[in-house]
Length: 186
Length: 274
Image (cartoon, rainbow over all chains, first blue to last red; front, side):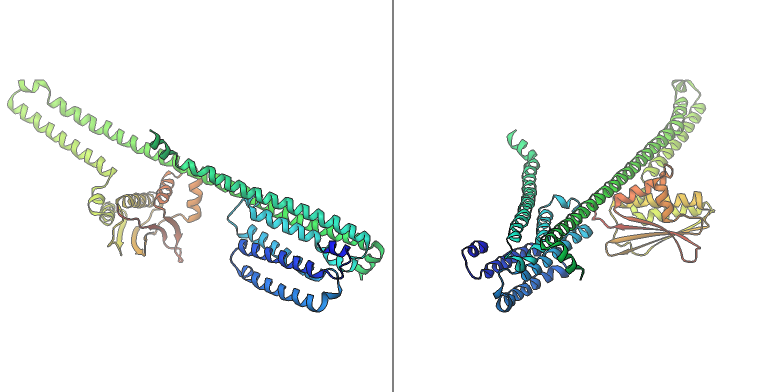
């Protein structure tokens, strides 16, 4: 949207990028807060969210007005997201009772975020300074879209896991009532 | 400095590509490590599960073998002792008895009565060995004290028992299983340890009942017990273990700090009386 507006000569669309970053980060924080095991990191997630909002507000109010992209906010968002994803994986490896963690929705969703934010970390950091370069713009779309597609594919895999587990639950329940069924129909 | 040098030689596009690829491969490596670690954990768990199943099988086989041996012993007792006794009694009471002199008849009837009394006693003994009447009628404490009195009667070993908190009895099934375990342990001590005394203490704390046997002979430790449990030998210990499992209890083989006494401790959670 921002790039589209910029192509029409809109002077400053950084607020759209920032808005997107904040919404994206908020959804991620909500998701990771739900799936993280109880502990100090889980408690820290709301504070990280508030801290990031404050930072984004200050960044926008005082520093970003002359820029065309919110590189610093995106970079910090990526670092926090990557740290939380790594912590989630570490907690799963260390303390989870679920042995088949790679057959769960949460695992694949976290992998999707991990790969997307790893892949676009450098890109977002450099965008602010390199945005005017046509070759960079080309590369920006290639890298961003590639990782976006990869993220969406991984989220599809995550949702398939979710659907499978729902299907399995549904197919198991009637079996328990087989005896009832036989008694009723005899 | 290095970053700046690279910037000038490689250009921003190359730095961007290298950085992106580097981060991407780091993420992939991290995911791979998690997946491989998880697979290893699954393999390890499967191995443990398999070993547990094998152990269960071994215990089950031991239990079946024990039952078979018990049946054979009862069959042998009935066949070798009760059979001949009753056959002899039948001989005394044969058809020719009515043609005999009254004195001979009286003597034959008296002898037959003696033999039938012996048979009754024999069958009672077999029945008692299957289910001790003291245990059934008066509970575990009386049964243990009865057992220990019999051991004391031999004069070889001094056996004593003290029940500290037996106000609330365990249910019948638990009492029988504990009695069998204690009986097996005491038999093992008498047979293998050359002990001079055996002392049993009972106590309860909350819902858990504790039994501890002290003896001054040559005992075994927990590691020996666990080793014997996996061996093909040690049927009695396997029976103890399978009974402990049924009771959902624990058993510990230890030695005291002075290395003078061995002790066996049994922990059993109390179950409601049926």
